[in-house]
Image (cartoon, rainbow, N blue to C red; front, side, top):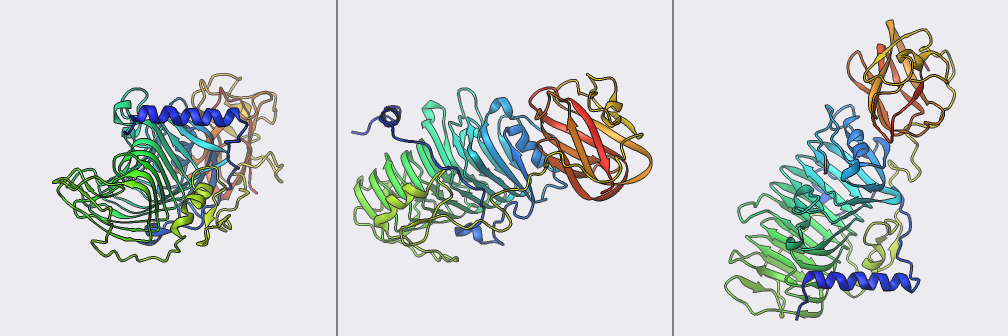
Length: 514
């Protein structure tokens, strides 16, 4: 008899506690920020490169993620956002700008393109906070954990989806992610990985989806049939009631996945959907493939799968299990190259490679995990956007210039930031605000140094440097220091603080021609 999901979760928690008590290490190695190696359907339709070649920005809050998106020159300017720490409701606010459309309480990737969001360092955890992709394309999400996102109860985020895609979404690669809940719909949770309203060319690889009533869906209803071309490979689905995934129309490819404890149903192909299912390992599960809960049937092509302690229900008017004698009912042509691991080794290779914090290891097709070489466009040791206070050459053009700004609070005047005296400073009235240096005639600037006052170093967490004549973004960053950009002729330059851990104190806003 199948236990309720809450009881199954309690058993898993107890097992985790027992492991900890026995001294078993449950932590994972630190991952690099490599973003090469996209696979599956995300390689089609022009490919998926994310923010390759763009500026690299470090973010430790949701607001800083939004500020990085809003600090780009345009909504399609490539950017790699390296995330470290816990992102939650308390540190995720809306940020406005011409290159973004964000909201509080969710990581909003809306009406944008060419973005990589990658967990680095000690790891990135999105706690009760979902990632929403809407009207966007060419997005990579890698090496992150998203957990306990709710659609009811408190707090709520993203309709209860860990990662949700909708409304004309194209070319998404989610890789080495951990997506998890703590129950089903009755506990307030929805899907872990949902695609709807014309979402196409998606790959989910080397990820863990667990402890949820619903793994995910392609299509929100029997009439939402514009989605598809989705690849699932080397993922582990564990303790999922159903939707692993649910496909309404469209085409999918599932290979080398490990399915454990699918409690009610697994891959549910319906409403004309087609799915190729090869070299997967299904274990301790029920009705792992078929058409369920509808008379609008889908189809499947199967080869090389292992069914280990899988039970099958009897066929009915809205229940069409593919087993126990599993046979293909269609043919699915796959347009990309891929290498299959033998199904028998899938549990081991997936255990060693899938999920956040596993070092971005991948399979080599011989059941042996490998650490991929980083993509040349995304080095594992990122050059900081704002290096330390390197002394530039030449004359500080701010000395003797004018100054103004917004939200003045502490300090004697805005002029404290361009007087050459680091013991005086300017502060906004809260944690954000802007200060400008201005000249009577156009002046060429290509380097800026922002110095925080003694005792306030590191308070500034996200900023933008603007050409105040045109509004163009010259540079963005996450710590004060030195910023360089192509030489620009302007009359006014603005340092805008978009996020801070307290009240900033800016001692000097230096400007240099070179």
